[in-house]
Length: 430
Image (tube, rainbow, N blue to C red):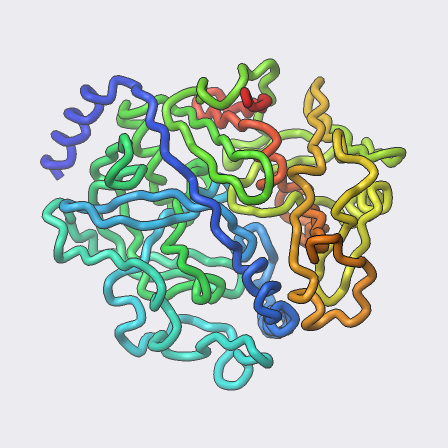
């Protein structure tokens, strides 16, 4: 460990609270992929099946089926590169181990045998030997000269599913090999030998939780927390997502993004030491409004804005969106009557309008007709129908009432100030 202590001292001197700007890549979420392939109905039945077989299922904040952006990191010496979800909604960091999918391990699947297949959607039910990890990059610790074996195991629970494996220490770098990397020595690396089922049909390698240590399972120090606790970087990061459903983005670690984001005019205190959660006082759309007051979570791993079902229904009715039970989605005309200030969120003393540009996602109609013969919207001239990127949230009374995901982040740059326990939102510069 003396080696790691020396590296931390050296890196902190070199960094001197520099800024590290890391690109984010837009990817197709599992939910959108299954809709496109006509497999959503079967997947939904699969999810309902495993929910019915487990009392532990709570929900949804840990379900990455809607994750839509990834960033690059590297682990080890020489560097091994991974594409991970940069997730402000969790504090866990894990990547696949080189042994993932190589041995007949029991991965704690909630169902087995035929119960894991519904029509066109199948997930291995027993030994982790088939689909798991086949599309992911894997970490080979034997090839890293900076790796130190920890010896303990980990298990991160995601409702009825989990990621589990081994723990080790190594150097983690935020950013790919061609980026200006934030270098963090001595990070606890969770090396997954078993994968959550929702990763098995994606090419996402793992999760980089950007949350607080209080929210970390097994009290493992998250990499970014490790960095600022060792004076490598300031405890602030700024998230910028380009407007529209297909743009890329950037995370600036260590301070403000002055290239893409305007100055924050009002900061909002966090309501808990465990998450990026704050008070949302009022929501409105057209003639509809609700001022009940709720807690809301800023989440970079969710392609939707989610909230209480009754409020979401009121918003949808106000903007002309209709619920479709086959796709579990609100759909809306691609040319809505209201395009600016489509939905308004009041946080503190500031109203944050979200426009149609960031709430409406075009979709080919023939993909939806796979399973919804009663679909009520006509395609526009280009053959598209449009998804309304707001959904009801089912959290069974646990956690925040609202999750402000990608549509909100595409509308506003989001400043996460861990040191001062506050959030700030500002408009884009362009």
